[in-house]
Amino acid sequence: MALSKGYIQLYTGDGKGKSTAALGLAMRAVARGLSVHMIQFMKNDPGSAEATLARAHKNLFRVDQAGRKNFVDKKNPDPGDIAAAQNGFSIARDAILKSSADMIILDEINVAVDFGLISLRDLFAVLDMKPENVEIVLTGRGAPDELKERADLVTEMREVKHYYAIGVDAREGIEF
Figure 1 (cartoon, helix red, strand yellow):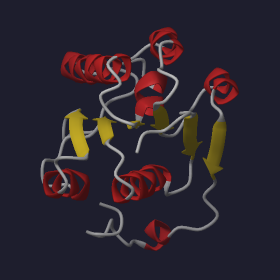
Figure 2 (cartoon, rainbow, N blue to C red):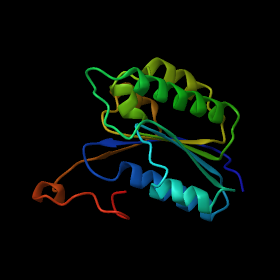
Figure 3 (spheres, rainbow, N blue to C red):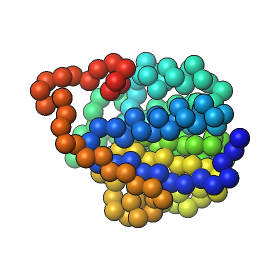
């Protein structure tokens, strides 16, 4: 089954659930026989749940990680962070141009743009080349207004209350 029409979905905001929403879409797509390619910017953990899921469903779900395990300094990104993001963007561009999957998720792309690792102009240029039948999902805090205007679907997660505030760390299987 292929999509007859693919849209651009955008998940942003300061609340939890942006990548989780994208993964939910990925699971639904895979369950229906669609192929998914997730490129994770700002992340690099081969033992992550996403990477584990991809290994279990390698015919339909692929994950490429384009980041380092360390946090990126927004004001002074390391050249390695820039190189990793640019490499991930190259993978994303090729995947989109070749229609290598029915759904392509650019996880944390908004953060990579906000941190100056990838230009918004370059992202728009790739989105302009999106094949008609490919669904693109963009996630991450700090999506610029121009990107919100461009997307077909925009969901902004807003934090109302979070258990991190009382000292609960990220939990395996829930947050990662």
